[in-house]
Amino acid sequence: MRRMVTELETIQCAPENRRASAAGSITIDVFATLEEARGDWAALSEKATASPYQTYLFLSAWRETMGRADGARPFVIVARNAAGRPLALLPLCVERHAGLDIALFLGGRESNFNLPLLDPAAGVTETDLRGLLQEAARRAPTRPDLIYLRNQPRRFEGVNNPLAFRTARPSASFAYSATLPATIGELTARLSKDTRKKLRRKEMRLAERSPLCYEHCVTGARAEKIIDALIAQKSVRFSDIGAEGSLDMGRVRALLTRLSAGAGEGAIEFHALSVGERIVATYAGIVRRGRFSAMLNSFDMDADIARSSPGELLLHALMRNLVARGMTHFDLGAGEARYKNAVCDETIELCDDVIPLSTRGALAAPLFSAFLCLKRYVKQNPKLTRLYRRARSCLS
Image 1 (spheres, rainbow, N blue to C red):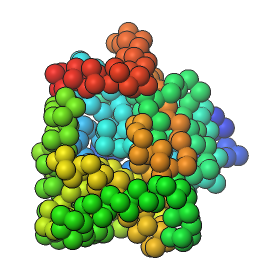
Image 2: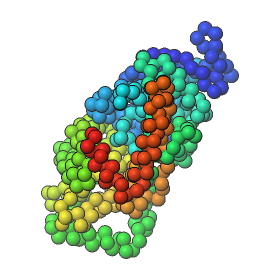
Image 3: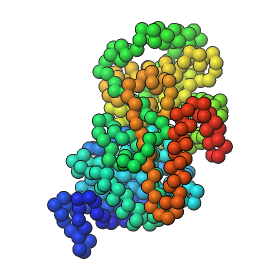
């Protein structure tokens, strides 16, 4: 652990190591492990507006599986006041890409929303956070060449995100969310009469093959079966769209298995629809304070089964289950899709920022930014999306 002192917008640094100001002095800790920051994480999680992707459970599981495989080195920044109370935590890591050390959010592509953990009473500003990043990077054992802040909501659950800087540009995709009603009746009323009829017909058609079974919050050996089905169905789907190499399924399995052993904020839930003994659709999502964030979903690609839209049937059953349990928010993450528009009433704007910190970073930043612009253009043009997936698969 390295402890350091920084200057934030309203805080004066002192002779010796620090000097009190009207606001008090601020120290910065930069942690090389998540465990060292665990106490601060817990304290800020009690107050901060954040998604399930910022929970300690999710990010520690990701670090030990996907992150470790990619060589991600934790770079967790904590700012605290003179009394030692944490005011801000930035859950970052450093990865090596194309000869550059890049600081980015923990969670990688598996995190749909990236946010800082902030004490709302501290009034942390964009200027404060810029200073925090610059000073932490300057004093890090290995100074990053640039910082890449991706998939940040500009506003989340009614709260502005000061880490979504004014220099940030729109991310490649939007994210989709819904505020859940108090009753299942209200949820059902959101669907048109025609939509409800279509869903009933699809259920009846599937049930002709064998009895249907919706399973929620599955654990133990049955959860392992659902993970197997999810991996198998996802692999077939990626092969079908020409994106076989875009996601390492062995790493996905390791992450899901590790998360399934946890409990509390950031815990994973498995939901499934079966026709007889055959699992035909799955959802895996993580939870925090009344919000369910769908992380992965899959459905059986067999033509006779797929025509009954098992994924859509499970999605509606999942939402009914969430309402019955008193959950308040639901999201389907980043990326445009028809089924998301059908059930989500909120589009969440995401943004990316690239901040150079070294000469090499300054040279690479324009290319990096140009790539992000191209990626957004491709993602917003469906005809180009398949070509992009095939190119990414070849480069993986």
